[in-house]
Length: 164
Image (cartoon, rainbow, N blue to C red; front, side, top):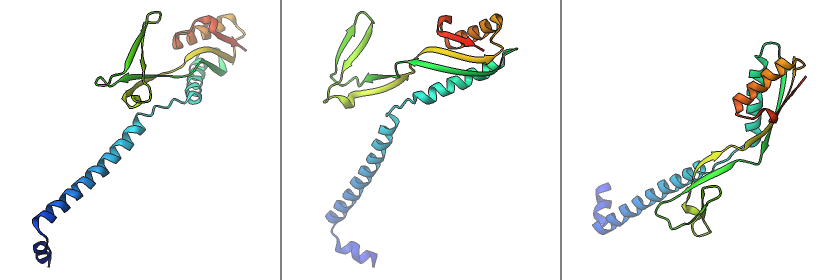
């Protein structure tokens, strides 16, 4: 039966049918690739989970200091996350350099929005840390906690407040 169907179809029709099937498969695969690619290139930064993670980690390490217990930490951020983008080298984006900050910026515009390539996310700057814990009434322990936080976050001591 199969041979009779093949005989009925000319070679041109078979070639056309095979081409249509191949093009269909290519479109299906290309659609899956672009939808996965867009999801991977859509950077999202959750500031509340970032601060929660920092607070929990600081609470853990502060509680390990001898004489300190029941630590509660609050971290405040300055601004929000910064998304860094590169450019497709083949595109014709306008670039400018800010001499004051030595930074390169791209004027993407509507026609070249697809040429911007996300290359990373910079977390927002930590503005300050407040700590309430038992044992911080002692100036020596307070200084230990401040030094611990300053070293862990590369933060100056005047941005850290510790109280009992």
